[in-house]
Length: 186
Image 1: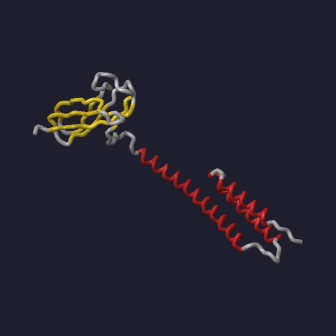
Image 2: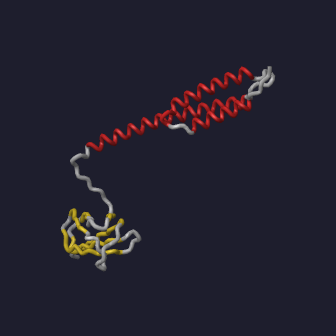
Image 3: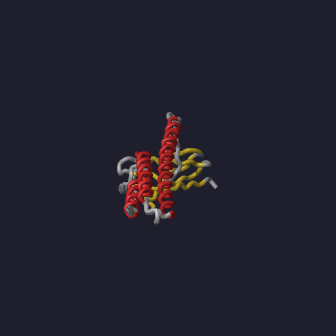
């Protein structure tokens, strides 16, 4: 009795591979176990029903084993990455608790204006300045307003922008940038 199941085998194997590719990562271990069991069952059936005068092609057999190994490897890698992500999240949470009660200052030159609340602009002067100007620019780089702050000592400084432009009109909501220009007595 000679039964040709090579076409069925290739089709079934392709379906197994495609179903494992579209599976959810949370059940990837069970999917790979199912895939492995199905593959071994399929391989056993194929060897049992193959024609002794025309045995299974070694290239196809090797290709199927290589694909199965790749799926198992990727599943294991995915599971390890899930654990790595949980580990990094726990480290991040641990480090965050150390920030409780601390004050943090981030550097940058952008501010957000919501149309009503006056944003605070913070900057640090290396030395005392005879005259300080703060230029505020819109998102296209156009000058919106220049604010004169007079003379200031060295150190951290703050300025509250009232949200008005150089013409006295209320500025639009959005993100703005600022530049501080300081000159000394010389």
